[in-house]
Length: 310
Image 1 (cartoon, rainbow, N blue to C red):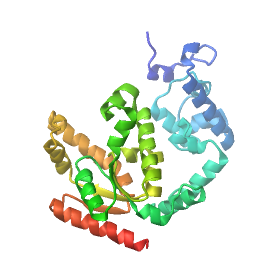
Image 2: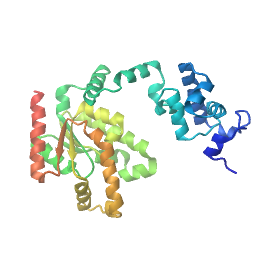
Image 3: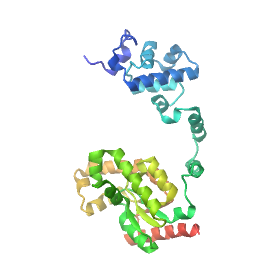
Image 4: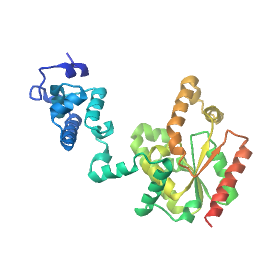
């Protein structure tokens, strides 16, 4: 009979020596090593940690030897006993060295404004930044599909006399297939590589340009950092209903196949990405007024940014 997580937690006769090797997965072994290292760092005995975590000492021993497949709640109790975060216990890369830990401590509890300044300074320090004028002359529109990136982006490019690029089309040219096929055939990592290549080429080739970016670009921190460092970013916002309606008006009825569930999914995506979209230099709500009114606000805001760089 297959052993459940609960079974593992309550077996009193289970010892590291008696467990079968099949349970010693690389992840569990690495997890156990981190628990031992963190316990050593705190100068705590196994008995002390078990008592503080309210688990049996035998159970903790199984965890440390990589033979105990414990529940998330037990891991949380052990993390609290070791005075660390659950992310650190699970192997967050920012906990792999003393320098990472010290840097993380310096940045903890800072305001969003402080963190933004730190990010900008780090980009400049390590050569990830760009000339301020060049950055202002590249305008990147971010936001979910249906926000107006293509329509307003083309009009803005025409008004400024800049080229206009839809990054999604560039990605498809590099891959030789549609974006949906990239995901289906090669997976998300391959898509992100194509996205990076298309963005890097746009930055290298065009000193002046308006770029309409894919809605999910902000989900990849490396690509989003590159965009923030080299472009003036504009978040085109819209209400969820407007996003859905505009996509349907473009002839794509897939989001309406299960409208209630699709709308809930869309709202969750908006909520999840809003913290990243809000890093943009400019925010324009395209649900507030007509297309012409949205364009006027966008044009005026971008031209103000361009003038400030002169």
